[in-house]
Image (cartoon, rainbow, N blue to C red; front, top):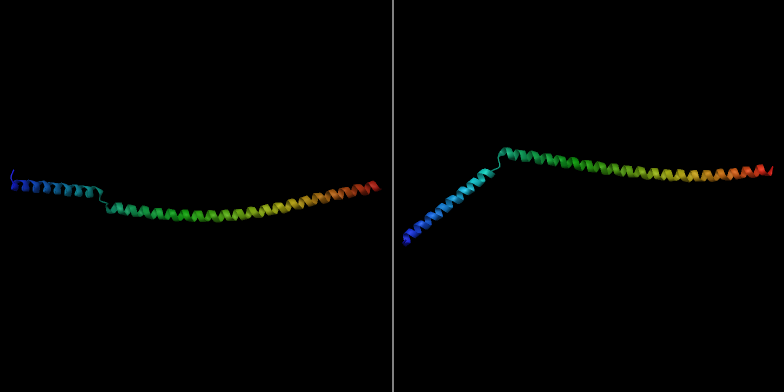
Length: 109
């Protein structure tokens, strides 16, 4: 094999390698190409995801507000219960004092 034949053989091998690479590139992009309907579907899904996230954020905000309201209401109810228990304790003590007074008055007669 002389120098000219070697150059021609190398050129043919490089050209075949180039053609195979180009064909592989074309095949990959042919099968992985995103169609307009796929893009539309992706945009629709993105919009639905965005709407779902907004709905979730609104629900979280509502739940936080509701939790704050219920916590406040619970605190008020506990304060009212404590006041009622204190009042009941004082009333029982007063009733005991009155019973003791009445028993002393009846015993003195």
